[in-house]
Image 1 (cartoon, rainbow, N blue to C red):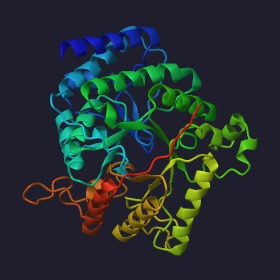
Image 2: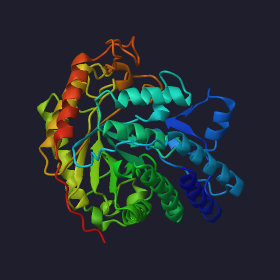
Image 3: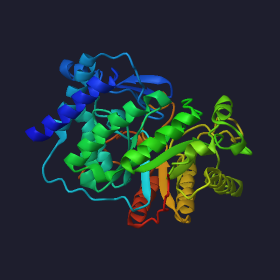
Length: 416
């Protein structure tokens, strides 16, 4: 243990001195609403977490601050070491879940688990209950001080994870790859490296204005450094660009579109759109047609993902303009998009949007409200007084069992 921590410390301190790691806060931004993580933890915990990473609730991305001092970087190093030492345990059996069809939920990581409280143990308790519930097999995690704890919990449950790689500029690529290497190396040493499937970005161009050249160069660097999967998630309008290859990166940036060349290293791809009713034939056609447009757009085989609606958002095609998605609407989204994924040659999986109850300033119910989480006596635990979606919960359990039993065929990539 001492030898491992000493090795990690050397790596961290060398990186801190040579790469000038940023001083950033452990803040969650949910739909442009800030949530300070762990605001009521003990004074020492707050001091530690305040020198952690910024997590953005939509992309859970890291934000750079190039003016940090070496002493601040050393604080970050110590924070990461403390968290790693707390979570390392002997005899954790890691089950490689990499070959199944994935089923996950967005905004589901410890920083979003606040029902029992916002201290470390309360967040860990909720995250552990959700992971052990049997609803999901894949998780989307930010690079923060909770990561090693989360990986241990996921490993014990036989799951896998993608981690957020961050929204950056081209001049930050080397420092970010080195930063991610610290996490990957530590996960490998602790026995969790194999369950990290790859890296993801949520609507990097349209939502966070990441430049096409930066995404291209960054995904190329990550793929070459780690050989793991590269998964950008698109908004439905990001790739509707006719004759896209005639545009330069800069021209595509100017109209807020994703250039297909920027996706050259994407092993996985998907788009999100929650307001199209999958109960109608027109709705089904929209999802199938748009899926094929995106696959054609990137120009090479890739694992494909759908993002079913799993929150009570207002529906844009409602008669009165204020009708919200309900259990029936979300259940059909789940069923149809799961069926579409399983029909594909290279099924990536589905990611349900969303788990976190405060993701939209408490305006909607989410899976944190309506999924059935029970204790050994059958009593509801997380959000016990919220109205539960029994049919949805049962179907999600069935689909996770089905997805987890499927050995998904993966494309072969010959990226230069």
